Image (tube, rainbow, N blue to C red):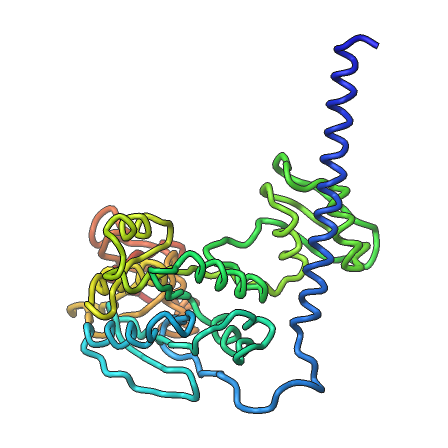
Length: 361
């Protein structure tokens, strides 16, 4: 056999081995995810009795601070932020410190959760209760010791990842719908490099799903497809806050500050807390909308707080649930308009600190 043909045979054999390995890895990931979920599910007979960490959600947004006990009093950050805003701490519930405060017109609930230890996802140190509260937050602030931040960050990410919290990730753009019959219908709108139809079928069979409709709208990994099947994952923004920067070199501070989603601070020296607040506001993605009555000045004392990307219709629903049905048009002043005031409809997208006057039919 000529050398060229031998080379082709060798390449084809290698590609076949790679694909076989990928299938086995995908199948193993599916099995691991299923077994991990079973292990982490607390049994009813052995469930520990006692109070949990449930805190009633209030205000416009909730922020959870998590970290290891050795970070250096996570609540120091809360107190530092609140002193800067001149807002006293108002609550203490069980082992969760509750700090409600106002920032840019929004009522934000800041929760300082008990320190997480390694193995928290398995229930060590009441870790399940702590992480359960973190799942209800709009933003997670992960407090890290700048002197050993890399190790702590990896461990905390592992604990949160194992209970279905996905940090700084968007939900995979995969359409998945189980059916009663018809087998597995697979399709994709993009070229897939990480998953194939055969691998998708193997993963579905591992979860005892034999009839389903699957449509990939982006090139996703087997792990992301498993997340879609399981369906209980939480996708939330996270700020990695490195404390004690006064104990490391300027070069290390610069390196940490340039990492994605990272902020460097010093609670002891009150360094960079104002920037932390600005980044927190950015990650909360809130929008303040002010209302105006006809012939009167805008009311800048009572803002309507909405999520970024809210429309005039969302404003109407926030004011009163029947207002949208009586809506005729609205006048808007602000950065979302080409000129002020601009007459707009229900679909107009509002921006931060816009002023709106609603005219009813």
